[in-house]
Image 1 (tube, rainbow, N blue to C red):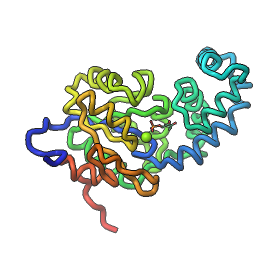
Image 2: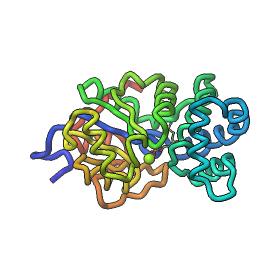
Image 3: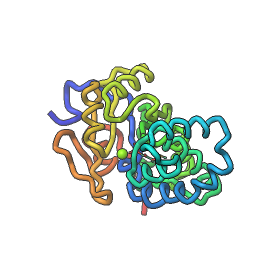
Image 4: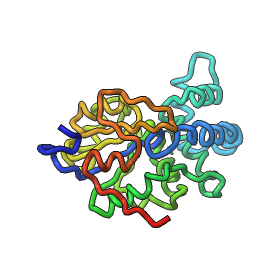
Length: 243
Ligand SMILES: CSCCC(=O)C(=O)COP(=O)(O)O
Ligand SMILES: [Mg+2]
């Protein structure tokens, strides 16, 4: 049966990942991470005593390798693209200045904003689930290439709800949204995240964006872009604007 075929519960929620799904992996790795890396020392020198930052640094010390200082651990995790809570929280705090000043604009693939708008207009509830902190998610969508898209979203979830490769996280999101899992469509580039979401009963679609070098896992429905998702799952497709 096709992904959106007869017998499937109607979808009421689209839950989307960011990196590799709405936004280029290269934007995260070549713009966001280097910005945080460059600003890390000055940020920690200025803010290490503030409660939120101090709490992150305590967590970093617990998770760092023996003998590794906090800044070295943070830099190593950034190089590894490790999805570690205190790192993601600190990155979000550091990126704020770049987004607010206009130095950074949140990358979105050109197909994303028109589909999100069409889906929201049709009554679908939109939410984000990313390893990036909720604060960082709001910055990216609030200062995106397509303008401020935050009003389109009714929910933002990060790994405070649990890891993206754990089925329990998706069950908790469904419960938090008061929706049956089968009414939620989760979009991600990472097959293991889709495995976990499908295990929790969500519908899933892998974004296989050529520019990101993503490979289709073969385990899940997939699409090259958001209009492809719309076609596969019977969601509205945005009207084409005249060239
Ligand atoms: C504004 S979110 C920045 C992206 C990021 O730091 C990240 O880890 C994204 O991971 P995702 O779960 O969206 O693939
Ligand atoms: Mg991703």
